[in-house]
Image 1 (cartoon, rainbow, N blue to C red):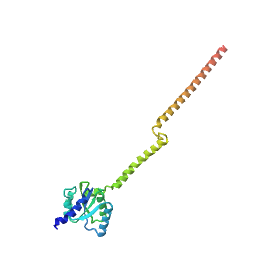
Image 2: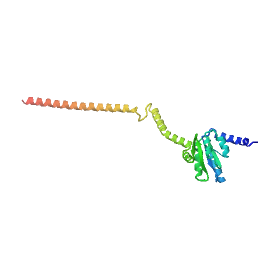
Image 3: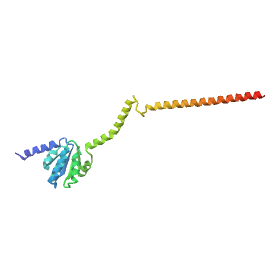
Image 4: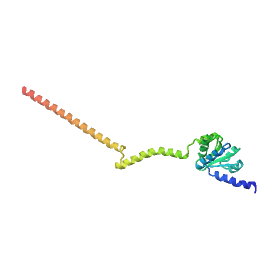
Length: 214
């Protein structure tokens, strides 16, 4: 069997793995111990990331005419690729974290959502939180307004159409205040009128008394 025919199944396997992938990261794994390699594979697998060691020539063929063709420039020496079809930042995040405790692991470059990133760029990608963490933060930020809105709706239902302390109560309170003010003015007017009448009666009495003395 020709060498090309032997290579074809492997090239096809790589092509199938990177097809529709969110990200592909190339690493140099030389120097990792068996225990470290086993642990790394386990962490990547649990995150839904495919991790395989392939010959550079095979990956070059598989990457040709794809979004990952730019990775061909870093395919030198022993190389492995980490592939994710669901979480674009998962490979970079896990590999970077693992490399802190296993310095032999080196991230060469990667393609994330169609964009090529060198080693430094991959460090920046690794700092992006996981999708689940982002969704959790988003949900947390939304829960407070939703909770407040739910309480308002409950108050509206309990009060027969108007939430306690809502703007619909304002006109009623203003009307009551205006009515009380009107009553107060009326009472003051009555008091002043009574006082004027008393003065008038007093003046009349004095006038009558003066006439009688004459």
